[in-house]
Each structure stands twice: as structure tokens, then as C-alpha cells.
Image (cartoon, rainbow, N blue to C red; front, side, top):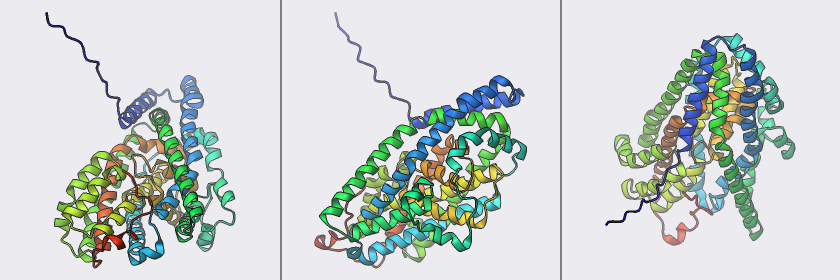
Length: 447
């Protein structure tokens, strides 16, 4: 007789993005059912919105706002500190920094122009939009209460410099906090000493704690998505699906223009390489980035492609790509700008040129301070919405389609890292191991 034993069945847990998609579908279908049956004003449905789905969505948003300031501060400081000794880096470090800022600015401008021209958020009934705003007014009051009502061109740059950083943080003045974090990071690497090394370790610990807490909060996203989508769909009905499809189309179009127009021009004009051959050489890194939705997880493959396929100077490429995995997030910056303007249009809120400039600058800095992990841009988007007076609960609109867009923007981020490495390496000789130590980041990003 043959004895058989049943091996324990190992069940794989459903990935978070699938749970978010399920929550999106449940909330959307439930809201559409309420909207189509005309029971949106029924007492029972209104009670559910006021006492269950509404507060649940607001709790999720408040948790994000609670964590976003320390997360962005620590991420920006570490992003600058990982560049190492700025004086030793010389032209390589400054070329990397300036080129990263310029390319991110181009990406955000492309996104903002397309949203302003194509206006994917237009077409929603203003009465319905105001109805939803009234429903969420009480819950959003604490979040947007300190948001600026407008931006004056004359005082804009003055307001970037906080007179009291603690007051700026308490009032959610995110741009001021980001500027302070950048200056703090620069000071940290210039004033190198045992004491500053310990301080950097502390800030790195703060970053790790915030990342862990953000990860825990993101686990609540499927429930929050279901609640937020129910509230939106119950009010807007099929208009919601039409606007959402337009948003995805504009976001993908903006990313495609940056990928297949801006990057080839930069590779050809500044990197002196054939763009077609360049994209052929980096296709493996792009596929991995698309599959993982994580710049950090893609880093080992990106380093190998730069070394073995692009034949870039090894030490320079390692520095640029390691820092770029955290600090060069063109796709993320573009996506944040598109999302904020789309939601402003959706709710019928016209942003002035000054406010759009603020959005652009925060998105550029947010590209440096955004964690290179899936859904890492979510806290930044939530904070920018509050800054410009757009209802934060509107973020539920994009969470259901964020997985696909995250895959697209991560691919853009990784390709951008390799573009920057190619351009910065142009004309730079490979260096000896002894000299390379000065170009190594103080704390490399771990995939």
C-alpha cells in the first residue's frame, strides 16, 4: 500500500492593486446603481454617505496628511544627502542635479499644457459638482482650511522661504517645507562631521518609519477607494466614467510625448547617440520597470544595462542612476501635475496661472521627494490638492486606475534615469577606483 500525504496548500495573497481595483469596482457599481435608480436623495443612502462612506474616505485622507510632511522632509533630505560631498562631486553632481530639474520641468509643463488644452475634466454638471462639494465640505474643512486662496506673482518667491518652518509645516505650506528640506540636505552634506553623520542616520530612520507607516495606511486604500468611488458615482453617474477615461488618455499621451519626443531629442542632441538604438538598448530595463512599478526594484537591471549595453563610464553611471532612482522621477512629477489640474477641472475650480506655477514647482520637488515604490506619489498629490483648494476626496477618482498609470510613469522614470546618465556621462572619462570613491553616494538606494 502506498501512503500519500497531502502537501499543505500555499495560497498566494491577492496583490494590493487587485484589492484596490476590486474596491474601485464595488464603489463604482454601487454608486452607479444608486444614481440610475434615482435613489441618490433617499434618506437611507444619504445616511450611509454621511455616516459611513464619507467618514471612511476622510479618515484615509487625514492619515495621509498626518504623515506626508515628515515623509517628504526626510525623503528630500536623504535624496540630497545621498549625493555625497557636493564639493567633491564637482561638475558631475551639479550637471546631474540641474539636468534632472530641467527634464522634470519639461515633463510637468507638457502635462499641464495638455490638460489645459484638452480639458479632460470639463463637462460635469456644475450643480452636481457643488452637491458633492457640499457633502464633503465638513470633512475636508480641516484639511483645506489652511490652503492658500490664491497666489500673487509678486510674493510667490518670498513665500517659498518660510520665516518659521514649524509654523509652515503646521499650516501645510508644503512648498516652504520642501525648500527648507532641500537647503537642509545641502547643509548636511557640506558640514560633514561625525555629528552630522549621526543626524543623517536619524533622518534616515525617520524616513524608514514614515515609509512603514505609509505602507500600513496604503493597505486601507481598497476600503477608501470603495467609499470614495461610491460617493462620487452616486452623484455623477456615467459622467464619471467618461471623465475618467479622458483623464487616463491625457495622462498617457503626456507621458508618450515625453518618452518618444523629449527623450530622443536629449539623447541625440546632448548624449550624441542614436535614439532608436538607445531605446533598443534599454528595453530590458523598461520592461522590468513596467512590470514592477518601482524605480528601486528596477535599479539592479538598470545598472547592468548602463554598464553592459550602453557602455557608460561605470562609476559615473552608478552615481547618477543610484541617485536618480530616488531623485529623478519625471513621470511621477508629470502625473501629479496632470492629476491636480484634472480634478480642479472636474470640480469646476479654475486655477490661475500663479497657482499652476505653484503646482509645477511642487511637482518638480515632489519628484525628488517621492518614494520609488508603487503608489509613492499618492501623499504628494493629496497635499497639492489641499494647497490649491481642490477637494481632497476627489483623489478617489484616480486610485482605481492608478495601477496602470503607475506602471507607465515608472517606465518613464527609469528611462529618464538612463537618459540623464547618458547625457551626464558624455565627455566624462571613466575614472580610477581611488577617484571613484568621491563619486559614490554616501548611502546608496537599496532596491
